[in-house]
Image (cartoon, rainbow, N blue to C red; front, side, top):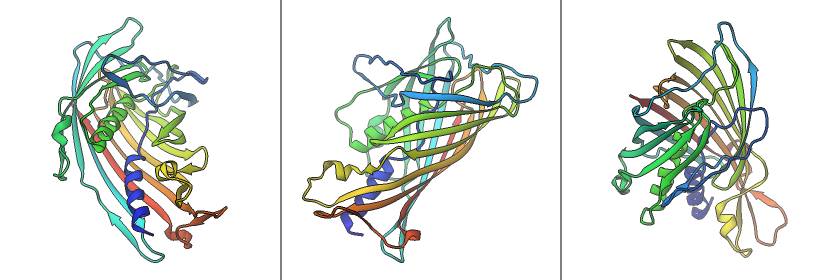
Length: 325
């Protein structure tokens, strides 16, 4: 693989993978959300269509799961991300890279609870801990945003403070952390459910301009004293052939890089206190496989970068942990 392709693969996959919001409407129908931007803030919620299907009600006793935080409820949330990237560089060898572990601390405050149960919150990025010293992480300290959820954990809208002076990676990090905020709290069905209940949320999401179908399956493992333990299994699959960013920006006189297959799977478990918005604890692992080919100038067909099918996918393993207090 030439250096140009190798560099692009690393950058595009770091920016273009990960969990996306799944906490969207629970009615059994397609819903298009409307958003309203706030002055000097930009709306970030990328997921516009979602469908929830209740698979099983679970055992008795059953109860409607609803978030019920009070105004001025404050949480300090610590999100830690560790990745490992395995990339082929020849027919017989590969390259493994472990980016620096990043820990982001976010403070979240409930500012308003409407009569219909909608919950408004404000969040502030307090600090970033990373071993990588070349990036000025302190630049995002005290960046602010807001989010609104309904009491079933469905995101209504989010916005994030704008800045024209941040490096691309820091802007991406801010937006990615905001996406994580969007996907917590977890979405709950409208019906009363008991232990063992399962529901599935199918969403259309966009990851770095790649259109994906995301399927998240939830299971209520335990519910006692207003605390729910919920597991999640996740899949992301492409809706169509995927041109890379390099392809989109290149002229027809250059070779083009394509992701022929893109698949993410993951699982995790959360402990959720219903008098708060963000889980007390959440851990998840995801595995992403992307198979690449390139279209050579004046050639009608795509060529595989590697002929060995067992050594031509780029793999990203991601561990995410969240703790709040």
